[in-house]
Image (cartoon, rainbow, N blue to C red; front, side, top):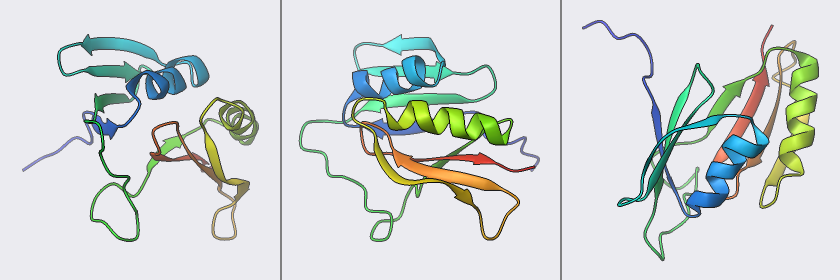
Length: 129
């Protein structure tokens, strides 16, 4: 079977409006589609496609070391400067919690940072030359 990579990544989120704003207002992605009856919002940057699905009230938070599932989402940036720029903007976005600022990845030369977007999904930004 031949696969061509990920078509889209679906994320279950606790705060659909806040997570959608993180992708659109903070990262500059655009809304490709909305499904109000679910509700869901699909966002894209022209290369990647992420579907955001609202969880029900009382949904539990994922614990990456205790649950099987999505450990984190890694988004590649074009340059070391872009990593600093996106970190500065994302870390100041409402509801975002920083795990660590840009640093070398396992001795470099790649650099990355990690944060949690408003619904608690762990997001990595990475520059890998």
